[in-house]
Image (tube, rainbow, N blue to C red; front, side):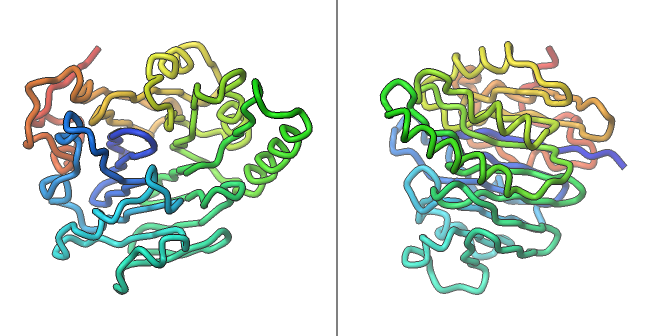
Length: 287
């Protein structure tokens, strides 16, 4: 049996990860800009999945939106939200509030809630033999060009302790902030996370408008056993085969910015096939 995963980047820290008939959605929110309206998840994206789990690691605008509760009740959706969102979420049996240290399971999804150094939580998730870590707002936010050295020491200690507390296990996918807005050494937190967690695939997030800088980071940084891949355009998607020791990445779409002809037919459910590398209605770049 081959371990295929489809990963779609939206913006900010928002990703959708399709593993077989399970869909994991992290930090979903909707931007207000009109030009990003086609990015919104729609009903077609949910079709074909037996289990959909929506994660919100921090009850702030970049990681949480009330819109997630407007999705059709007929879809098999469960919500895993940081407890900060308790006053903003409906009282429903499929809504689960969590804090650091919790460990829950929803159908075929095993979820460990880990530290984000005081900024919400992070999620370590396993489904169908694939492990995924979404850092939320966990990062080394040292702002080295403007933060006093004594404060930097405290921030570093807090961050290193949070990473050290993450359960040590084989990790397939890691989604982690690489934010050039930090300034000097903006990649320090990501580099430490890669060395500590040793993910097979590392996906930068939370980079704002600095996509090209993050692409350059992915091109130039080399870590043994870790592939760094930068998805920077809305709806940019890759299929990843984790079966062999060396992962195989197939780019399915460049994203909305470069695929202007895409319309509402562009959806996540198109990827969920016995062989996700099979033909779909999506443009394929085999380069």
